[in-house]
Length: 283
Ligand code: NDP
Image (cartoon, rainbow, N blue to C red):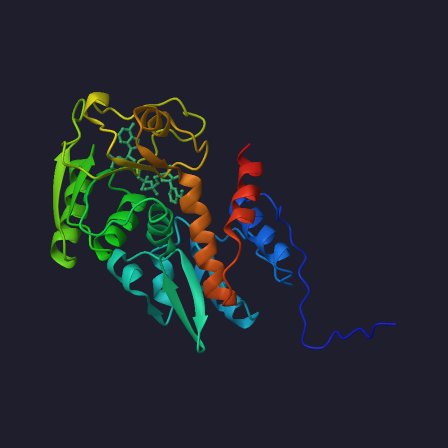
């Protein structure tokens, strides 16, 4: 008979559904595939309880955690340090314990780069990014750190677009400019990579189109879309029809999961298993 030991333990009575978050499904599929006796739980935390939740994670021996909006900025106050891109973006998506210290990383942009590198290297490339929100910020900082030659931010809100462009020109070794997105945008013909980092195309508005001139999209350009659900957005479909190489938002999500698991466990998980688990969720 197995000896039961109730010393120094708290057992949780968990009142939330724990298996509905797509990231959880994906990460736990990797844990099972690699016979890791780990769990990845989705826990809702209110802004007022964030500090207690971080202290709780430390006290309960968590190896780390992901955090989403609205905690990505505020969580920094409760950590011991930041990785390079998280420090530039002032936003954390993944926390990892390193040598007893709690370090905030930003895996959003790194996941994007890892997915992009399957078809092209951003080094020395001319990049156009639609959007200036959290995803665009993470992607543009990481693309600049990867040696992009220039970045054009195309955004509807001038304030957000200019703010991001200023961050890029002031803090990163690449040239950046801002185009206010009014009416149909024509992609400059010397562009190498075009990225949709807006929420246009996200479920349930999945037939929404970016307002750009389709004739300006050339087959030599690489196209990337951040929308994971559904992954086959009108932009990705149009690009493939033109003969462009295109990556979808699922690749970025999977790569972020891979990087998180590497941070926490030290092992590189099988990305194909994780993508399959996600595809089943979004099916
Ligand atoms: P934000 O709300 O921070 O930014 C949204 C961006 O989309 C802004 O630039 C906004 O422009 C623009 N936008 C929204 N609607 C329109 C419209 N109708 N016309 C023009 N521009 C529009 O969101 P995030 O940056 O955090 O997320 C953006 C998308 O990225 C989401 O769909 C999310 O699902 C996806 N994402 C995917 C990830 C992945 O791993 N695949 C990871 C993170 C995010 P404006 O500033 O003018 O309002």
